[in-house]
Length: 223
Length: 123
Image (tube, rainbow over the protein chains, first blue to last red):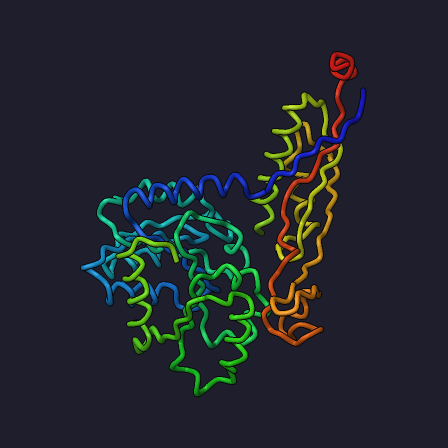
């Protein structure tokens, strides 16, 4: 019996990244622009999707993949009710979506009937950041009720953001939320991030967000 | 929680390389993990012990080689610790600091046992 050390040097997420690349190629071929929407629970992901549908549908045909840790498809039902073609993914307790789950969900959607696909990740500000799903842009959502220190505490999530949607700004007058301190943290981690300050309750700021999506859908370009 | 799928990926990589080398047993796994990836060593080892049971890698010891997170100032080029991110560059005060280390996340090497005849046939 002999002992040997074998050099491996293999990225642990390589298998996921490979499936993600296949997903992206499939979406590109169908001309569908896709985003991965990530936030902590309760930031307003589903409310943003409802507002987005109100602003863009039916001219823009919107699909939705909704990841949840259980079989309860409440969010997918809300999306379907608002007019999206919605697929619910039960992650089986997994705290984030992975590329193979999105691949399965893509098979259940008629991509030729879509312009925009919103992948609503599991509500979690840590785990989803490391997993490429094969979308075109990663959108991080936050709400002012979470506190202004979140970029500093969850740098991994903020660093992958192509766009940031800050929700519930109608509550700013009532909260000790220092917007400058928050935005400084966001820009430190991702200097070129697109920032949208919105209220999904009043509709404020949704127009700029919808314009940004529309521009990307039309151009078919990555963020 | 997310250490479970991560550990599955690590095991797949380790077994693939061990089988390609015709190893009879994997005794050690060396993982390079940057501070910016949020994984807990003890959790990975816990899942590993369960997942690797009955495979070539059963009982293998995981070795975590942490990489400290560092930033580089985009104005003056000075390197400093990740903890400076909110305070700015300690040399010139500029706030444009870019992460240059700490995102590593890979299997560096495995230590395996192999039968002597394999070694002899290679000579």
